[in-house]
Length: 116
Ligand code: FES
Image (cartoon, rainbow, N blue to C red; front, side):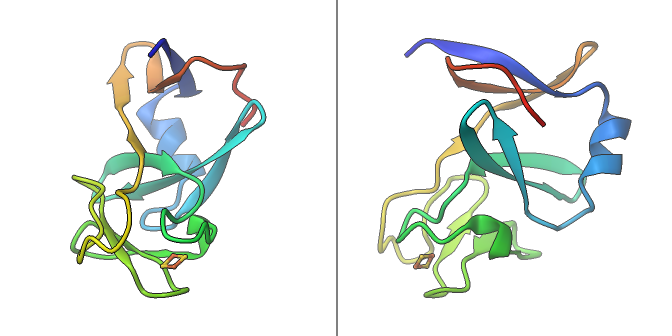
């Protein structure tokens, strides 16, 4: 799969200003939507909808156990592995986040420009 590095924020500081801790936010990149949460200082970047039935994850909750809990049917997904706690559906798609001198970026399948 061809991937691209897409810059999300100019710096960690601007990321922290834009993303209140523990709140799952929607980020648009081109025509696509994703979900992002800043949890314990670490940015987690993932697909927009719940892997179970597509409920928007900005309405889900990030738990202290580094899971996303979807309120529709209460499935819980590990932010580390993507696995649902009882493996009742496919794993949550997560994307690699890179923080370097260029800022905060994510590695995505190749697509269009960032529109935050
Ligand atoms: S849609 Fe998320 S748990 Fe069912």
